[in-house]
Length: 196
Image (tube, rainbow, N blue to C red; front, side, top):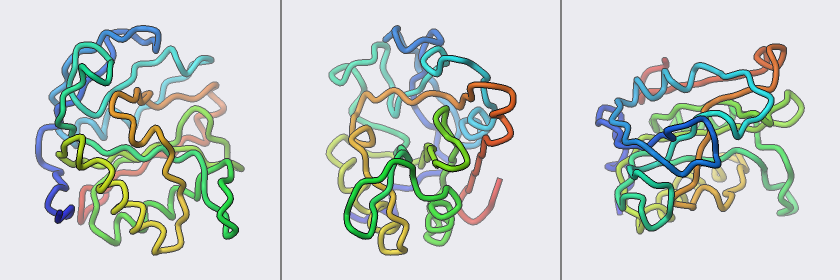
């Protein structure tokens, strides 16, 4: 499979977003949005004491968050930056710096939007990277393999967590626990050949 042909930055993303700002609700609504609009929505951070009480999105369309119900065609690949692999092969809490991941994706002309997550602190990187790409369930693992190979070949040892492969995984909108924590929020967007 030629994964380079799957990158789609101009196409409408057919995603889902939660109807309420709570992970306890599985009710979803369809969201047809351009990559530019989606990126812009991720540049705004919500201040909250509870990250589970903010809206979330899914990689594909559905009205109920359930693996069986989510459409078989997805529109974004998500990398959950929670941990990295040491030189000994050990999984270590905290991802490589976001700039390192961004540099590799940009060098390979892979469009993306990235933002630090609720658990991020300057001493321990936590972030999410969303890549626009139209693909089927069967293509998810090969696409993740391709992206992680790009990163690992460049020495950026982001760990591929199971959530990356969970089809109906809920991904929270950007949030921080306090106004002070907003100082540490980071956002990056690359549209393939240009920065936003």
